[in-house]
Length: 184
Image (cartoon, rainbow, N blue to C red; front, top):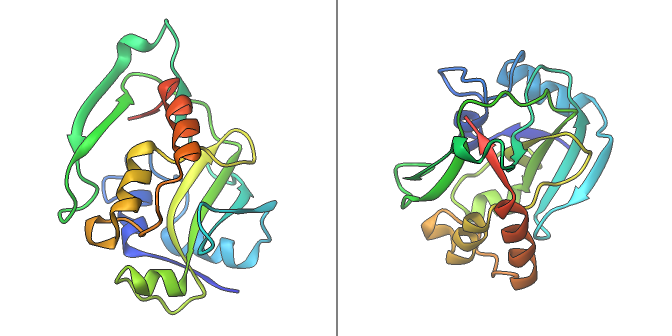
């Protein structure tokens, strides 16, 4: 099995501005090489048969991507309508500003199969393509953001995967994301 970094993930995980919310202390090539040579701590099923998550101990200074919302930090929440790419419609997102999260214990690359990548118009040579990465404290999955679930259900034309909405998974994600937010 081999893995490659998709252009979509490269711009999000390794942005040119090297912002603190990106993967730190490694280049895209070094990151992919490590994923291809180091066995993951765990392999988790994704939200669809074409998706899987590889759990790796964090070898970088990359910080945890999600912070619990508390009365002490709620005033630092911000929101805006943003699109991930020029072709996508903007959606409402929220994040913390002014918080310093801890270094993540795990990096959890999100992988899509070669067949799914071709279906979404992004052919890859490898067996699996990296479409994202979670930076977590525990060796598990952070629930998908509800708007991502909706985008996926809308289909590849709208930047999704074409997987129908799972109402129970959506409810669990909404509960989680009501109590947590990303940071910038």
